[in-house]
Length: 424
Image 1 (cartoon, rainbow, N blue to C red):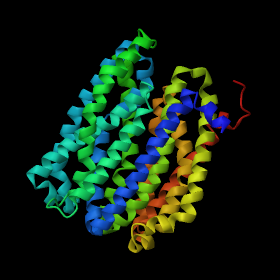
Image 2: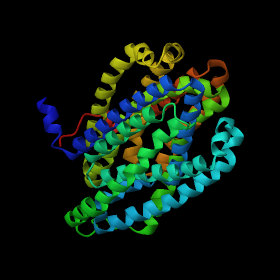
Image 3: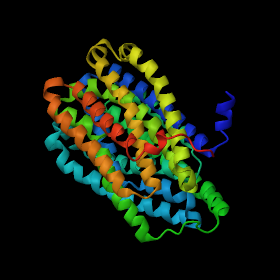
Image 4: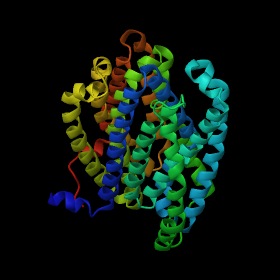
């Protein structure tokens, strides 16, 4: 207990723990959301809705140009330039999100027939475009808060979001809205974007600028563009290996099979968020103290492995009981998949840490290569195994792809982590 309290005095751990609490709370309530959806709607509706949510997240990810990484990397040291950096990121991403949302309405119905009827309704088509734009800013603002070292507010924001979408899901059940699940998921996003950004620009950003003074690390457009261009290419591979997987399952195996796949995928995503948020805090602190890069990396990896081991000790034996909450149908189809996806979180943490180290060192090419290899292996193995193994193919493909990359990294780029710890 003394060690935990001591850790909380360090921004490295404090912001990381805050983001992890946010991830756990959001994922836990997200699981409850899809459990209720499975209870209130038929599997085909759940599968189609989860595919639409994944599509929305994918388009928002494209529109962000992976400026999330740039915000975490440069806002901490941008000083008075932080406001311009944030506004520029928002403006570019908003414009791209409107184009992406509108463009997909013309194409999605061709390869996802279940979405065609929804997109044919003008009200839903308009809301889909708005929800893509709202999700774009919603994702960026969490990274703005992290860069401003205000990550303690991220779990508050995400808790409100999670509770609001649960309330809407229940309220819209049995209503005339055929896309009730999608509306319940997305309306709270837009409702939170305005007040959170009001606080960012009127309170936290001025305080950050006053404390930082002039930019400690000069940020030119050329430097930012070079960082974002390379990082963005890598982010596209990351998006394809996450948000497009449920769409792939829906296309290849059908929307009902996607319902049985999506719940384990959602639970496993909580473990991914643990690593993502702790390494985000690591990026902020290591960027400020480059001399302690591998000292911080070793500490973060140790914390992650402990937390993931605790999570696995619950998920592996408890998988049947977790899925039984959804229904016998789901439990029978998804237990094995959940266990394999959960195991893949261990090598995934190593992979994410390696990319964060590369981000601090401005080795953008390394990030792109790692994400391309992970995406290529995952999609290729999934495509090969889906017809024979069904939804289990995704679990094995993920474990094999990330396990092989983690072993490679521990023997090369992350080898200093295995050396005897240096004194601080």
